[in-house]
Amino acid sequence: MFIIQDGEVNVFLESANGDIPLVVLGPGDMFGEMSMFTKQPRTATVTAKGNARVLTVDKRGFLRRIHEDPSLAFRILQKLSERITVLNEEMSRLQETLAQYEKQD
Amino acid sequence: MHESIHLDDGSRVAIVGGGPAGSFTAYFLREICDRVGIEVDVDIFEAKDFSKPGPAGCNHCGGIVSESLVQMLASEGIILPDAVVQRGIQAYVLHSGPATVKITPPVNEKRIAAIYRGAGPLAPGGPVRQGLDPHLLRLAERKGAQLINRKVHVIDRDSSGKILLQCGQDRFGPYDFLVGAGGLSEATKAQFEKCLGHPVRHKTTRALIYELYLGEQAVDHFLDHSMHVFLQTFKGLEFAAIIPKGEYATVCLVGDDPGKEMADTFLASQEVTRLLPPDLDIYKRVCACKPLLNLKTLDKPYADRVALVGDSGVTRLYKDGIGAAYRLAKSLAVTAVFQGVSAHDFDNFYWKKCRQIQKDNGYGEIIFNLGEGVIKRVSPLRYGILRTVKNEQQKPGRKRFMSMAMWDTFTGSAPYKDIIKRMLRPGVASRVVFQSLVSLFAPPPRGENNDSVRRAWQALQGRREDSHPR
Image (tube, rainbow over all chains, first blue to last red; front, side):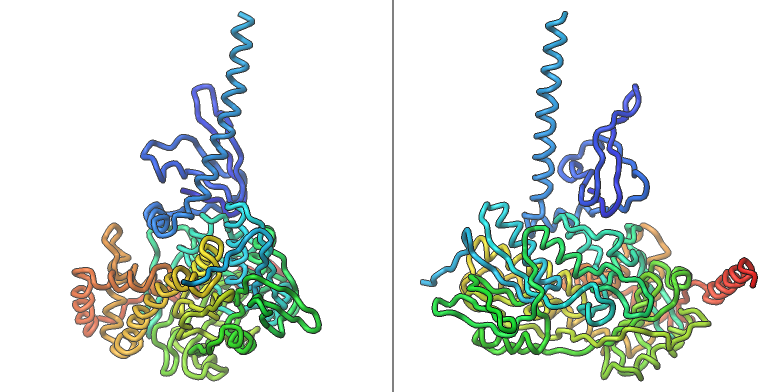
């Protein structure tokens, strides 16, 4: 998992039709936290936007500390919940657009 | 049956002292209350003006945030911006007589943060820096805590046991809960003894800390991103370190009667003259302070509605005081919100965390006594350990138990118990014994060639002079 200490990073998906920008993250934001809990390959690409200082959080040490103080996982849960909210909104918007297209056909 | 005292909507908390322990307590109290959905007022009383350079605006300390603490704080959402981090440290260099060994951690990332607690050294015309203490204080304020820029003179209780504070002629309170985070000052002790109902006595020693002006280029060239630790220079000096920060090097000395004489002897020692620039004016040192270190922490630093945290309560021996402040401040906030603020609640929850650190300090004492009594006195053993570390560093992939034990001892990154476990790994002791025997005959391990570092520096100086024709 990585946490931005200073500066900003671009998060994007690499696809055959070029890069799809997802979000810009700033100080205090984290990325790569999903790999703490799943063993799936990384889901997005992250590059620094200008100068950025990014901190690596050691997986083993962090998991050990979560066992000692479970509230350390709270922020990750909060971030993931926020992301699900955004995804839900995005999905309903896309479904609406799709429904409109189907009507036009 | 013990009566529990709870914090509820509208409860008021006073924190005396706005150093890391006080700010962390305020931060976590506000954050946890916010998660639970109760509104608790938190007032922090801190008289210091952290924007003033020099000792007046600083809570004197060596200024290292360990890599494990940097990571934990970041995962709490507490980040250290570039303005606060004076230098990222990625290696430790151990010096002992002619021997030098560099220890680098597995992750090469300059994760250790060298910081100033206040606005930086008192030097005419020098820049005002952003210290760690005002940074944490601002984060606590952003969480909704209120900073009251006053010195607390009297602490009292009303008839119901609530806390009343007096600053000069002004009265504050009543407060449902009082947190003492005033460090080891005499004033704090006297005020809190009455309120706790039992004596507040710490066993302390003094350190000597001062800033040595090198200039940014010389810091880069001679100290690099390394903290330098001196294992044995002369009698009476227990521990010495040089930490690069901006254009200064912070020198920390612990030993018998730290003062000018000790500082002079240290700067004149072969280890230091070998390390620092040859043209260094050693009298260009500024901003000295002699902070107290906590050697023996308090037992049960709390009573109904009152608890001490940070240096004034329980902290770690020698290393990572800021980390201990973070862990215990959080534990205190969790106890206060979820359990209550009676002595009984602190007994059952907060004290357990304090005890963990106290117990670990026992292991720390074993390590430091071993270092002081045996390793420093028996030079073949000392060189043997350094040789073992050096061998481990040269062979990537090998289990670096001794290196990691030394790394954790000096960085304060791991509990002392874990360090002892590392040293007791099979094979480690036998390797040290073997290398100690070798060092009876072989020359001590050397670091990079200091002459070449110096020659490169002189070449650099020459070039600079050429490029500025007079």
